[in-house]
Length: 480
Image (tube, rainbow, N blue to C red; front, top):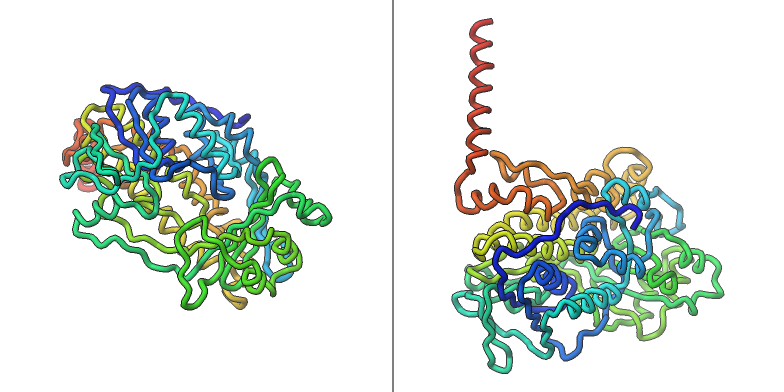
């Protein structure tokens, strides 16, 4: 909290809207909270009968914690989170440290917002309680099976009931029914391609590690551990006030075996131990402490970008439009950014279609660039032993570009920073700031004009200044 500094003012809706949010995950809850705080009427429709706190550790990067601060929840988040001081990059076979990536407090001071790790269930609980306290209506056991065929703000539940509003936000996750319907409308086949990887998520409780001094040292530290080896890597860090050690283990997908894209699919501990049999003894010891029956595994697929995230008065957010692979730890953060921008856009105008067009312009390219960075990071972290691997390991000790994009300073600036550049004549070049809420508010008029296919008066002035400068340069060249 000490590093959080912000001057962003809370928004007030130009016209209160009736907002339908489909899905009560991290993104849906954030969107509901932000919009309700701005004065909109919000109902959340969730397919399950009970909203349970499932999942494992996730990263709260500065771009996410900054928005949590604006929604008034950062103190509660940080009370449940582990502040990560550095990331240790290590070789799989002998546990030798290849390099480090300094994190807190330097990252917090640079980006004016902290970086931490938290259990997804803790974050979801904080958001759920906040949403309930604002008076948002939450309907469980309310699966949305379709939206209106013209994508007006109308959804039909499985029971047959239709619910109407001013805007529909599809936060229904990686298996989104709304995305599938929207893709069909745009003539696009909704599908995914396997990356060749799968992932284990495991949680090791403190009591399973208490007789192991090395394991307890990891649990009691504020250090993230990244072990890299042929075909896979492991990320580990403590959560829940240093009472649970969280590990994500990326590995090749089993031949002929397809695992569901789900955080709840159980897997075989013995099979996991066999894959990591050649990794160092600390890793093997940690895996041996995982309670039997508590190994969760899921397939990692890449999803092709949609041509657009909205149609008429229906819009997608989070995993429904840009599902993130775990290589740069931005899944939750990018959904939270979506929520922040939707809060701004839907509050600054009473024209829903304009708001959704601005949201897409601010968010789509950025989210998809981060989404696509996964393949670069995956390749760098999973190199087989050999010359390329040795060059990578040497680069970790250097001052140039870090092969691990998550630890690369330039890419951190893009993911986490708060640089704002004024939107001028070239919107695509100028939209590189990463405080997406400020970006939306401060450049609103230009963004609205661009979504309408025209330039603002300010842009014309900039063009005229540019042309005048060229004429002056040309005249000086002729004269001299």
